Image (tube, rainbow, N blue to C red):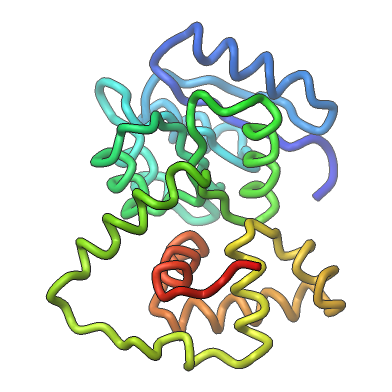
Length: 219
């Protein structure tokens, strides 16, 4: 990736957008190219400015975050989306996960956490705030209760794919995984595609949730 990361901010509160823009704009490798007050405007901004990541609040009047994410996902070449939420937004957070969010960051996170999350999803990784993860997993287990599950689903993976998935659970990007495993980034992409297929996961975040729910240690 060359040049600064291009970010679209979507939040219905102008003061929140200003604060987020201030935090992100202070980084030399990040630039905020557009702001939006709801999910519909975020889609328009993404089409117009071709950002590397969209930072999307989940609770907005009009078109909310989950619906905005779904509309983005329906378009070819959609940018990754980092959902912005509060700790007690379980229902809307789950809607964002189902819609295809690439990560979640809490509104009260430190500035450095927000920046790290934006960089991670923009580079093709995933990000789930540690404070949100237990709630996401609890809801995943509840949603799958009573449905047939294969407790050996992770056994479908090769040892190398398991290594890649473990690093995905730690929020590593494809480039970071390639460096850690001393392989090419194209090889990592091939492994990620195989992992998604074998776990029946729509995206990286769903694969991470499935792995952690199945007890795969991230360490």
